[in-house]
Length: 365
Ligand code: UDH
Ligand code: NGS
Figure 1: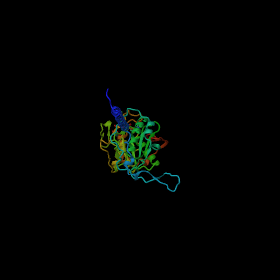
Figure 2 (figure 1 turned 30 degrees about the vertical axis):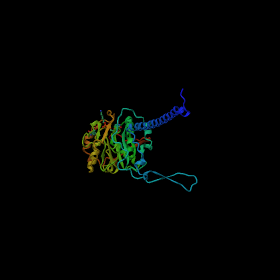
Figure 3 (figure 1 turned 90 degrees about the vertical axis):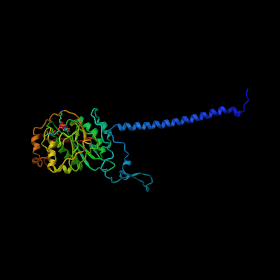
Figure 4 (figure 1 turned 135 degrees about the horizontal axis):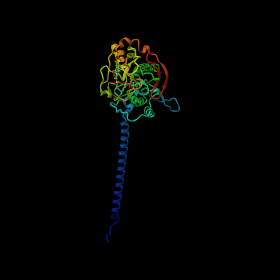
């Protein structure tokens, strides 16, 4: 039997106690590190889900992009009042930058999934009624009316709205979308509908730029800005259906833009091209005959996709188109915005666009 003092007898106990404390501290440390890592990973996953949707703007904190003087409201302390209240005061906005910081560049455009317009509305909460938008943090450089000639292309229109609204907002434009719907089943007349869009949009707002877009064309890069330039602009320069190139140098079809001044200079567009083809060549002739040229983005930024479709009924190739484009110079001063006549049937304000249903008559009337 060994005799030991109480102090010596407690040595294993104290050792055990110390070990336990170390283990508990270590476990606590380990748990905190794991939690930290877990929450960080969660944030990363959350962010990457948003980034995967190429239609959303990058999550940019506006106050980090603009100096605070550009923000719309300022808070003021109201000392004389008993109850503390916060007053907002509108401040003059500074102009938006020449190049929007919100642009993301190339976009993934596909037409495999159907579009739900209710979802599109939710994805674009900043839209005002009638497809109107104004940047809230800066003053847009241009007021743009986007005009779409339309009849029986509902599915195409859904894709257009789904893709274009976020793009136009990232481009920081003060814009409105006008769908000009030809009433009845007479032969289609694209250029006359575009004239109607111009006239009707101007009744609503002091637009200084007009973008004319087919309903089935979607840009593949948001750096292709839907605004006006020093010369009339052709925007759909690199279409997938033409192997991402121009079908011919004078091609002005698909999507184009003209400032109010440029449009007036050419007396608008012809009203007498019923059926498919030639009206865009006539517009080109008008521009050149007034001493202007065509401006275009480069072939990379100007890439776009067309939604494949069959020829529409009542839009058969116009047999008169070749004769007409040969005589643009003779006819353009008397046929155009100065001779436009039509009857508005109804104007419908949707959240995503303004629909103008119009009776434009028939060929020969
Ligand atoms: N449009 C309509 N409804 C019509 C006809 C034309 O909304 O019934 C509008 C629409 O915005 C369209 C634009 O007018 O994008 C131009 O008309 P289009 O699509 O007929 O012209 P595009 O050159 O097609 O795109 C021509 C027919 C191609 C047939 C190809 C067969 N494989
Ligand atoms: C030309 C047409 C244009 C038309 C272009 C592309 O031939 O109106 O083809 O058409 N001009 C005449 O017919 C005089 S497309 O292949 O996109 O349907 O825009």
